[in-house]
Image (tube, rainbow, N blue to C red; front, side, top):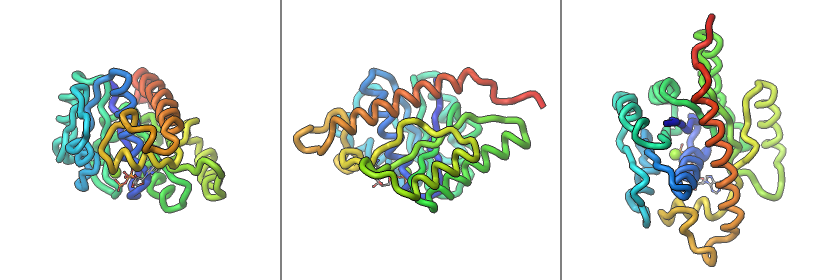
Length: 231
Ligand SMILES: Nc1ncnc2c1ncn2[C@@H]1O[C@H](COP(=O)(O)OP(=O)(O)OP(=O)(O)O)[C@@H](O)[C@H]1O
Ligand SMILES: [Mg+2]
């Protein structure tokens, strides 16, 4: 079933947070999820290992390297409703391998130029494959850590640049929300957090649900598209 990778060669762009939000939302909806951790820092693995309610719908594949990624995906894609791949925030051969094995690449980009550069490296590889090898890998940018109150100038610049390059941007940005950080630190699922202790949990849940709706739809469409175009 759909394989979605989260990529940005810049650290801290919001890859692992976006993956965890999608994973927890899919699990809440009764879907089965295999999370593949290729990041040597093992952030998502640490979350899973300490998670308060691991559940039986989710499996973690950890310590996955460029050598074991293909086998891990091929083994688990038929068994799970979704396979989500967390990539490291640095340049690595894992990126090319993951791109080749994914139905959809999600590129979280914050409204900062450094972050956009990390995203641009991923977009350049995808554009190169498309133009030189006629291989089109569906991909989208998700704007991450967006301030709920103000649209910053740098965010507008990033959006403008993406529009110029005809890059698909999700309608739903991931808002900067305390529960998104807390779910990570407290090692819990977003929907299992105590509303009395998390500020604006309802808004955070609505944001995660809208994000998941869009990604589920995209992943389904991506699977139906041919990846190799006739030259
Ligand atoms: N929408 C958000 N709201 C609040 N905090 C966020 C949000 N997105 C990310 N963060 C916080 O920003 C930090 C970096 O996010 P995250 O770990 O998801 O980025 P990453 O791209 O996976 O980084 P790395 O490349 O190092 O793996 C974390 O502390 C995370 O809790
Ligand atoms: Mg990460």
